Amino acid sequence: KYIGLARDEGVGNYINDDTDFIYIYDEDSADNAEVKIVQKEKKYLRLIDEADACSACYSNLVSAMDKLNEMGLTDSFADQICIGQAYKGYKGYLGIGNCTSCFEKYLPGCPPRVDTIIKFLSELNRE
Image (cartoon, rainbow, N blue to C red; front, side, top):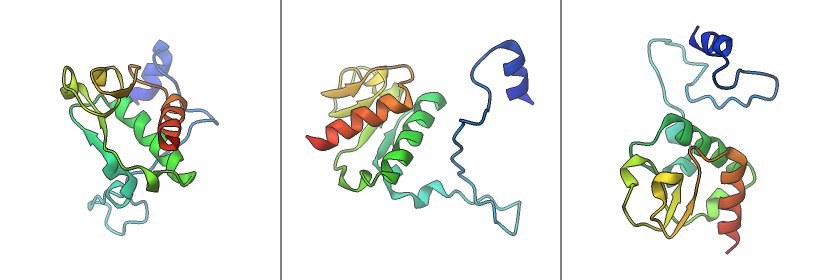
């Protein structure tokens, strides 16, 4: 309902043929009342250290990590990837988004685009 309202107001991007979906719930669950989160089974998501991240920023990072995992790159990541507003002003090593601008290595953006995150993390992985 709300996605349609947003589309009618010209806000955001509406779902089209190029939209990628990442499902976080088990669609085959026999008991619909039982919600099973599948993301916990994706070990590459454990690399993300999220602290008060906006949903747009976090979802872009998750989408990028999903694609990097498909490319076989996430197994070689050694560092936690920090994301979120709680990191403003804190120092760290690797961050995604403007809120981690004090980090040694960070990707600017609010939110950073999925393709930019993929490029940034791929290049760091080669170092």
